[in-house]
Length: 156
Image 1 (spheres, rainbow, N blue to C red):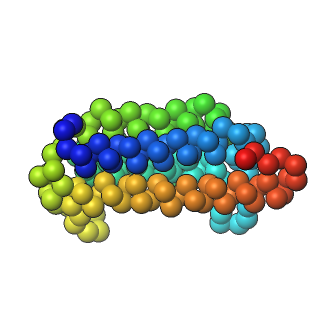
Image 2 (tube, rainbow, N blue to C red):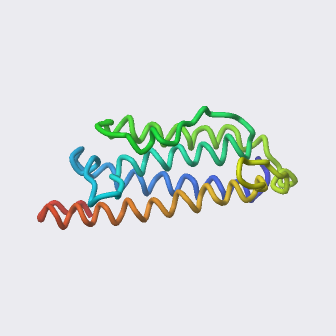
Image 3 (cartoon, helix red, strand yellow):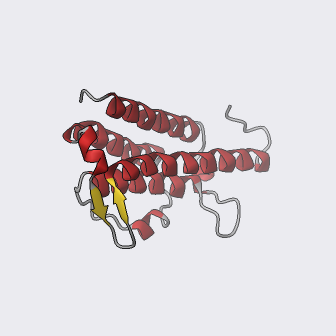
């Protein structure tokens, strides 16, 4: 992969992965399953959703490589070990690292026809990162709320 855009893209994706690892590694399982309130997601659900969403936008949409994703299952994730949860995320980053070289800068302008709208490959790739970083913020806030709930458990 010689295009700087794709090198930069992978750097940002790996940075997202690294930050999620840092958030998750320091927490007990109880914190991963905990939800701060009604209609709010646990950290475990957020990580599962980030992995599913990244794979969808990078693989299904940008690369045209179907994953058979069932989005609703991501929001039912509970009791998954840290190592399995993080491995799920790592596998998406590995997938991107292995498969993004199939794309060139010219491919970024290709249009993908989705159910509700048409989007370019470039849009799909950028949206994948945007969406992942948004939920990283949710993970960070949920960790902070957990730490307030359990005084003396600060992980950072």
